Each structure stands twice: as structure tokens, then as C-alpha cells.
Length: 304
Image (cartoon, rainbow, N blue to C red; front, top):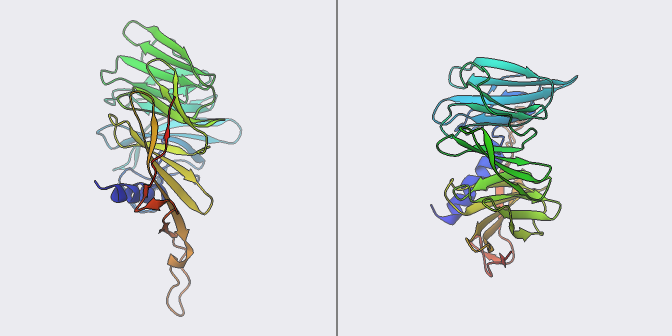
């Protein structure tokens, strides 16, 4: 796919589909199934409270949704988004910090301050597991589903073997990393802390590179194997999108940079005598002064 097309697809996803690690979450308690390109297509209400987190089960039309409401209401429910039927729902005393399915979707991971549990994805039954770290904001399994990695906001990257029920590795890393993402065959971790964008070596826990000019945002990966990723920041008037790549030697390179603005002129004015429709503004594009067709002319780099 050409670079310009990739950027368009990404921004379309952000502005229209509403993706994130918590994909298709909704403050009104509506869930939007993966692949729906309309703000209303396929939406259905799963709660009267705001959706905090959402995860899609690999290969199956099911989603897990975490919601939080007033007076300590915290729950996780699983839905079939084709039939719009709920499989189960569970209440928790403490807020959920992360939900995710295992690599093959054979169990659902729910992390909160009271601990991390593994659930049967069909029934919600708690599965046998070791005492796993609490309050994780990133939890993933390896392809075999026998190993797990946790990022804890206290500044810990922890690896576990579910068969031996032991922690196999533990690294001290920067604390309070926001929107952490593993990529590059789980070799790298990227996110944001008080110093801006940073990329870690997920195998050693070492900080490989930083980009302080990108202070906050969201990170999207091309695929699980790629060392490239998109960094998206909200400018208030639109979005700034960076296509970046980390090398095995720890050099962070900005491959492309574009700004997308919300164009008010594209709102539907309606016909005479009709009420104006409150349609969502479509993005317009403005090239940055130092770019040519979205490519940064210099190609900035940051080393470890």
C-alpha cells in the first residue's frame, strides 16, 4: 500500500471508525463492531455507562467490554456483535485497567488493582492461573499462549510462564507509560511518559530512543511483525500523524509526517426548508511546510 493511502486509511479510522487500543469505545455506552465504517452502522448499546475498554476476540465475532460508572460500578461483559447478544457479564469491586484476549482467543485477560484473572471467553468462568501482577495497563500472550508479558505503571515489565506458573523475567522501566504498545514481534514497546514518546527494548527493558517533541498521543502498528508504527497526536483542530520506524540498533526515524484538519465546510447544509443535519466533519489535508506529498524532506532520526 502506498504511503499516502496508508495515512488516509489511518486518519479515516481515527476520525470515522474511532480506533484505539480500546477500539470503538463510546462515552454513551454503545459498541461499534470492528469493520463498520459508519458512526451508526452496527452500533448497539451494551451499557448505560461509558465504555472504558474494548477488545476483539481473534477470528470470532465477539468483543469484551469494560465499563465504569458512578458509585463504584465496574463490569466486564462479552458480546457477539453479529447477533448483538450478551454471552456473560461480571461485576468487579475495583476499576479494570486492561482487558485483552490471548493470541488465539482461548481465554480473556482482565487486569485490575485486585489482581489479573484469566476467564473462559464463552462462560466467564475463572480459569486456573498463578497469582499474576495487578493493575497492568498492557497484557499480551505469546502465540503459544503459554507465556505472558505485563506492563505495570509502577515501572515494571514482567514476563510469566503459565505452565510453570513462574515469573521468568522482570525489568525496571520508566513508570506511568501511557498507551503502551508492543510491536516488532514483541521486541519493542512504545508509549508516552513525561518526557514524550519513547521506545523500549522489550527484551532487556532498556530505553532505545525518545522523541520529546511528540509529548502525547496514540500508537498504531502496521502489523505484529513490523518495526514501523504510526503515532497520532490531537492538535485540537485535527490530527498530526507520524509514520516512524525503530531499527534493531535503536535508531528512531520519522519516515513521514502529515497534518489532517477537520473541515467545517464539509458539513451538510441541507436543502431549503429542511433542518440542517449534524453530520460529522470530514478531514481536509494540509501539507506541512517541510513536507512533499507527506514525506519529511530531511527524515529526522533519534538514537538511543
